[in-house]
Length: 135
Image 1 (cartoon, one colour):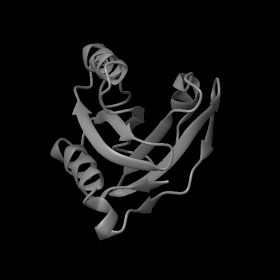
Image 2 (image 1 turned 90 degrees about the vertical axis):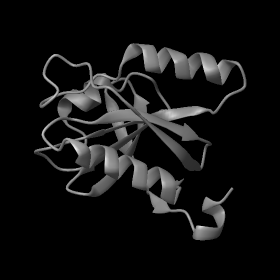
Image 3 (image 1 turned 60 degrees about the vertical axis):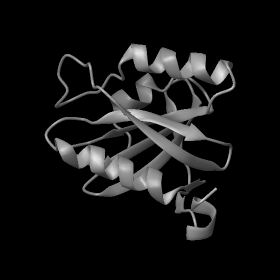
């Protein structure tokens, strides 16, 4: 899986804006590429320890995809005080098989795919070449 340079920059910038909370957002692209990231509000009751993507943003992305818009391929969030790896809570939330889960911690990114309810499998993540980032 590749990620566009613009998407990577946007995610890292969003996660650094308020490093004490779990930043979160949506990932758009294809089977082999994350081309765009869209930050959302973390509406969790304790955003320093968990994340919840604003349902209005999620539903809007799903509706837009159904109407021919960008394909929603997954989600991202940050771990302010942990590694760029899924927590037990993250795995338990991974109910939509096939979606990507990108996790940011300390400026590093890790990528997983929901394989089955409660299970995330690692996915290799590479930065898209500069030429392919323009498309």
